[in-house]
Length: 139
Image (cartoon, rainbow, N blue to C red):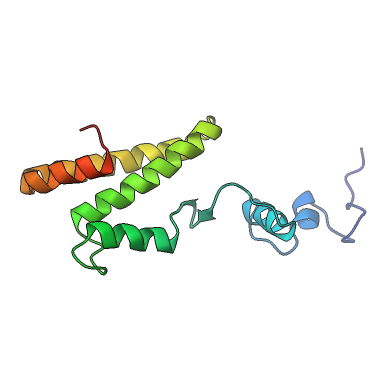
């Protein structure tokens, strides 16, 4: 089999990636670009390497659980944001059961939420009970 340059849209390209991805950094961004160019939804909103919430959804959660709209660091807000991300990842994994990297990320988020819940339970028991009631957690 000949191992010369690929004949096609880009002359002199030696590798498949040079032909397929001339202006893209990664294969993921190339696929995302193709879906967006075709007007299709790729089903997963990737930003910074992970599933994300929209800015409006985050602001709504912060407004609901924070003391004010700039209160993004309190345990109540962090737990609510983590719960929203965990719920999104859980839905993603139901449709993509072999996505082990997202599963690992989900387990890390669950562990972080568990530690924050333990902290909140020690510091503010009534706030802890109200939050798990509001978020529908089984704890």
